[in-house]
Length: 439
Image 1: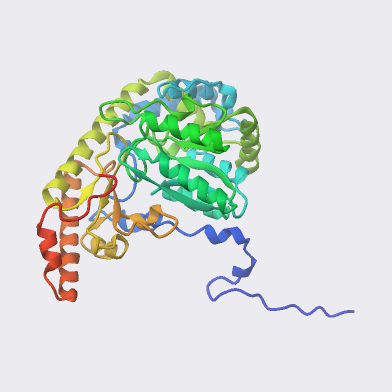
Image 2: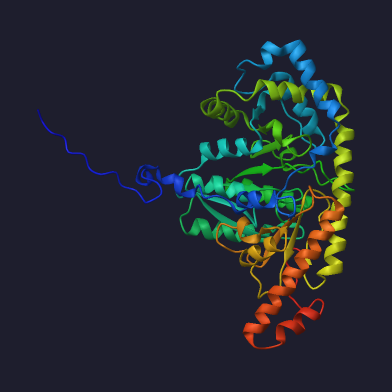
């Protein structure tokens, strides 16, 4: 009998299976946003970090009634496996929701997913090979970059300003990437009330960007979780309303209803839709029939448009509280002033590093998200994202006061070690710091 000699398991001290993982798992690093949740959830900490909707604004009886009716009338269906494409009735209702953004489509081209994050992951799985390039705004949505990295793609950041992604810069980046022989798979964009920058892409730029991408053969992935959460004026119509074959649109009920239901969708051209359904079935077999039917019943019986309007009023008040507090306590900084959504993007004085400053902020019982979380290349150290969606106006004001103490303390510390008073003079002179491109 032959003796088979086994070699010892390789790995590191913490994980004996380290050498067995697929190469793509190297992109599965925990995001800075996720790492913040454990600390930010402490009751004494004012969290301006996570983009959590204020779900307490939803009347209990609305969802409770929907749940009860679903279980009473369709319980066996709700608790059973369903279609990999999603409940047909809900897909029809999703068309009504998208119509508010100017989108016309067919329910046959809607694929329901477990939140729009899941749709983003399925789309990336279908399109990305190792070494491919995704073009995205700089900064860009943090978890999208985690997904792109997990499929071993590179993210190329195109700058934006107060009017959104800059078309001229997009042309330059495409030309440079193609000259280098790189394969561009798609443009990923959050055009409305951008996460994290809070800016909205203008109508003129939407048209120009779509023309650029069409001429260059680049697919557009339009991620639009915040589009209905405008404060005063509606944002421009969705990019998908202009171009159907070259745009895949992602939507979600997480921001306009509740993230715990985990119901999102993709609207895609026919061929892509077919592959999304197959990928959906391979990943989860079918999205939850239970939560889909609850959302569908809610849309049937509730005045959901009025509920969205309630959210708009709440978030408008909180944004105004944040901007007023920044003007009062940190007037030397610059920031964006969003017209909807959840976020304000703040630019710090050049000597400061938002990532290095975070431990001091947590010690002062305030949390934010460092700007580095929103770049694939470690840029953003001079920026931070502040979320106004979840804390009350009073908590926001308290959090900004605490943040002002942190910024002042950091500048004083830098002054001390620099051995000069120059930084203090800069700090006292409003407007002395270079304004953000996103002001």
